[in-house]
Amino acid sequence: MTDTIFALSSGRLPAAIAVIRISGALAHAAAERMAGNLPEPRTAGVRELRHPATGEMLDEALVLRFDRPASATGENIVEFQCHGGRAIVDAVLAALVSIDGLRQAEPGEFTRRAFENGRIDLTEAEGLADLIEAETESQRKAALALAEGGLKRQIAQWREKLVTLSAQAERAIDYDEDGEGIDPALLQDSGALADELRDWLSRPRIEPLKDGILVVVAGPPNAGKSSLINAIAGEDRAIVTDIPGTTRDHIEVPLSLGGVPIRLTDTAGLRSTDDRIEAIGVARAGRLIDSADVLVWLGNSSESPRHSRLISVQAKADLGNVDPGSRSLPVSSLTGEGMLQLLVEIERQARCVLPADDALALNRRQAAHLEEAARALEGAAESVDLVFAAENLRVARVAFDRLTGRAGVEDVLDALFGRFCLGK
Image (cartoon, rainbow, N blue to C red; front, top):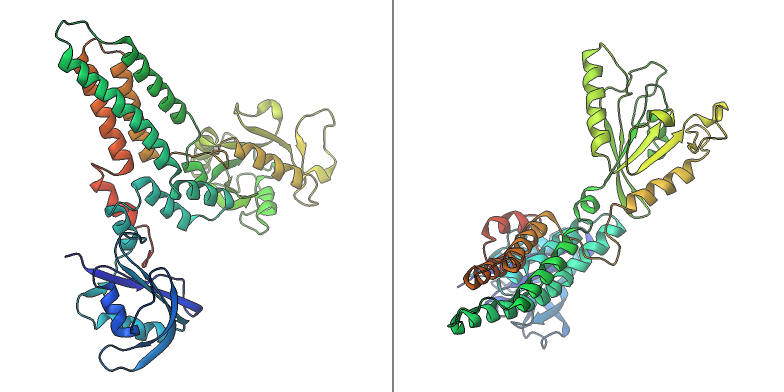
């Protein structure tokens, strides 16, 4: 029998309210030992919580009961909404420990049970993990779309089409006694589904949204890069001097611009140098420029690297050295001139890398399995033998099963649910 587990499921103590969750076959019986008769399912009731051995009153709490399978975990659940003092919570948890058959939950164990009991699939679990970790509005929206089953529903539609194709192929194998070959419609429909998956694979991924858009500030020495970084960050994050080569390694500042996560990165000034340490910094700056999602260039615009999302800046505009004929944006880190326009442009360029707010975005694992399914469907569309077509369609079904967690995902489960906090 699966253990009955419990944990504090709310935030850091002390707090106004603390939620303690119990899940498993003994959840109702254990809660009754502490709270007496439980309220009706999905109905809250105020109860005195007492120690099951001594009868000592621990707290007066709001008690909620959920019956399996219509609960978050698919098991019987009881929640105690107690006062959020440390002593009260410790006393209630200690009382639960004293009940035979109950144990403290592991991190993510409630959500893992929801997955194992079919309440959510793996894509929804990944969305929940991302939702808990979300720090910006864009991250929250993307995570919520996954957690609410958006990708799960899309995969269900694809799989329904795939099962129909597989049934057609298997039926044709059974009845193809005259060797008439493959129905062209089967090949065409397999190719059409592959094209649909390819369209999804070409969309922006979730990683830049989760990890942050890499915005690299680059240019020659003494161009004002570090001053600009400090002005945007609102604090001295980079050392600023008039000595060329002061910045020898990159400095990264995490920011949120309009809900978009940004990794604003200062780099060493680009120049030839005999200083071995500075040369390493210049080489790193070059690699960062190549990998930048957005490049902010401080220097002569004619010398800027080629980049698809380039923002050319005329720094130190307060010194009066602005070229009125230049398309570069005049900015002064000292007076603030042009700073707002620069931030608006950085946010605009950064959003080009991100999925739209209302779009579902794939992570690396999901994209890898979708790629596997697309390749198999393309193989089916190009097959000249029914058996080969049917086998490719089977491979595509297995890829979908791995995508949703139906099969072959044991190696990712521990890592995924380990991201959850205790009590989730």
